[in-house]
Each structure stands twice: as C-alpha cells, then as structure tokens.
Image 1 (tube, rainbow, N blue to C red):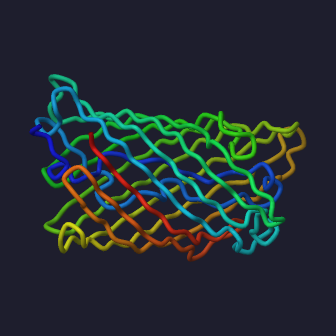
Image 2: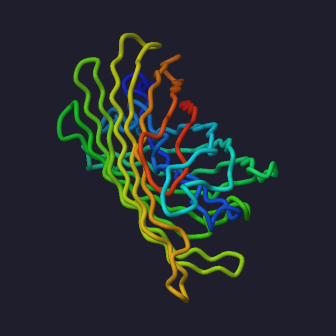
Image 3: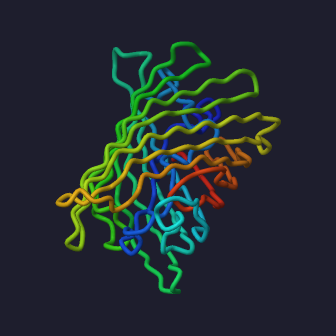
Length: 298
C-alpha cells in the first residue's frame, strides 16, 4: 500500500473528550475536564491529494486517562470541589479519512466514538458504564506543504449510562491547525461548545456555552523520542434553573499544562503518554491526570 502512516505522521483526528458530568455531582462544581485535552503531537497533521488512498483509510484511535478529582479550585461553588474522588476512562474512536474527486487540496474525515468510564465517589461508592457516544466530521486543506488548517463539527449524543451522561445535546465547532518546521511540530485549536439544556431526574436547567483552546509543541529527536509540552484552557458560563433562573452551577474555568512524549512504534502504530496538571482555575476540580493515546492504521 502506497499510503503509509510515516508520510501521514499519525495525526488524522481528534476526539472531543469533555467534562464527564456525573449526576451525583451536578449541584456542586461539575467534575472538571477541558474539551480536546486529549490531543497530542501531530493530531492535525493531515494528508491531502495523492497522500490519501483512492478508497480512503481507516484508523482506530484509543484515548485513555486516570484523573484525580479530589482537589478543586476555590470559588463560589463549594470551593470548586465535586463529589468525585477519581475517574478512569477509555474513549475509542473509529475514523475514516477520504477524498472527493476534483477537490485535490481538501481532505475529509468522518469519526464515531464510544467510551467507558468508572468514577469513584468521595463516599466510596462508584459508578461505571458507557459514556455519551459522539460523532463528527472534519474538513481540511493545506495552504502550504508544511501547514494544515481544519474545521470540525462534533456532536455529543446523550445516550450514555444514567450517572455518566451529560444529559444534553452538545455541539462543538472548532478551528484546528498544524505547522511543521524541520523536527519541530505545532498543533493548536480554538473552539466553541454549544451546550443544550440539561434534563434529568426532574431537573431542567439552561447551560451556558464553553470556549476552549489547546496548544501542543513537540520536537522530534528520533521516532521514539519526541518530547512535547501542552497548554489547555476552558471557560464555561453559569448553568441556571430553567424555571426560576437561579444559578445551579456557577461559571468555571481552568488553565492546565501537560508534559509527555510521543512514540512512533511502527509505520502503522503510534503511542503518546503525558501528565496533565491544572495551573489556575475557578469553581471546578483541578486537573491531575495521566493520559495515553494510541493510533493504529489497518
């Protein structure tokens, strides 16, 4: 097969892994989580034209993390704490990249995501099950041979298990970019999450939208040694009771950083592992997480 991941740099997709909103914690600060926090180097280094096979290419991506939710940033909302002690999650995505004849400098990607999580509460009880499924479409072009620009639409479908679902239809609109200069790689995005109304257990509230951004800087010494640093940010408005207008969840924000390494194992297999830590924030749990991404082409 002429199309190989070495040319493609293992960076064909992104998953919008946002906050896991636990029903048990909704009257306190929501369990933290920055949209697109799972991106790693080469996430948006996408192929166009002849680099895409005639019949497209399919990939399996797996994003996994362990998160300590025991600490929070102080604010109006119960000092930023939720009822969650820690969360373990795996989010797996099937992605298909393709091209359309006659549009040589544009690539397309359809993706579908299913995930599973287990959350341990501070009262030692735990909840586990399927996360809300997600699907999306990415369109991109290459203004120059080293620069990729993308647009993505992403939909969150509230069909996950009761205690793990966000219980709202959410939509992400994101601009994403990648630039490569020698062994240096930059990936970045800025996005807007339109959050639907929350309806669950007799509660109906209006949720304000989220603004987010993510940056990744990497330098490749060799295939297995490509250290990187990240900056991730989100800001979300107040959630209010739909009937009374009272604030149910206060506005929150967080800035976090990550440090890790990208490993290219074979032409078809890539790993990335990093530690993510909250720097500053308000009314949300403080990010303290180990994260792992795997990409396999078949």
